[in-house]
Image (cartoon, rainbow, N blue to C red):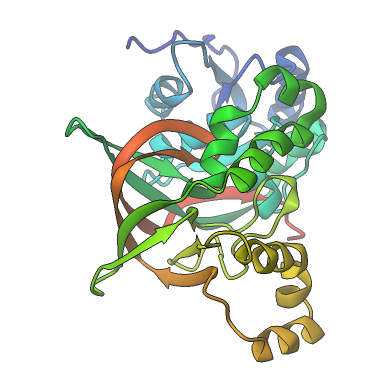
Length: 332
């Protein structure tokens, strides 16, 4: 794919940013005005601008932007655009500023970035503090023997979240936001379709089991604010996994209870006491590792940061510690 042509900057020399923007998600004219204000305030040269398109999810734009050696790369768009750009920027040392502009904005929420506040988000991108975070990589193996590797910042999953990502009406999502996910989630839960898989954590022996959902996260919160993986932290160098094994019905009661009360159980002192003394249930198991390999008896749908990736026969997941530097508010 040929890289897009930038808007050539003119003006004084000095530190320079590059902006990758999804024009479908962002008011580009307003963004340009706010970026220009920050450039003038901080003495920066005019930024180069790169737009995503139907033919480019952001990777080609990010590669072209990085070729200009910017001091800062600002990405304006939703979780999908952010993931594509981060896949290119990770490991380069270039600081990433984020202007969240999608429905979920899960990674932005995890980092405490400004939401629905374009001016504040742009100011944070130029004048926040730098925070190193981890980047996950999922090598997807297809039934035909082909494979491809992709980055993720929040989580990858097979089961309910993949069904949600792949079967939500985009028009309904644009109109009512998170509520659009209710129907595919309900269909996945009530359908209770389970599959057989074998997984291995780090160098441990493989384990075969029958599951409804497996999610591996760098961050633990799903769409609609559901805390799925309480111990997941974006900068600890570890992946956190949860496996849902509800069986033929009763297990969903425990799973529903845990999802409803996870924030209380893990984010408050009384909740942590209750959690410590509560019995563990086979329907919901948690684990931490630096790598995880999954082999599936039959191909299943998979998602990365909410983007459906089709059917896979297996996946190998690893984490790169502090591979990405993100600009966050100075107060967080």
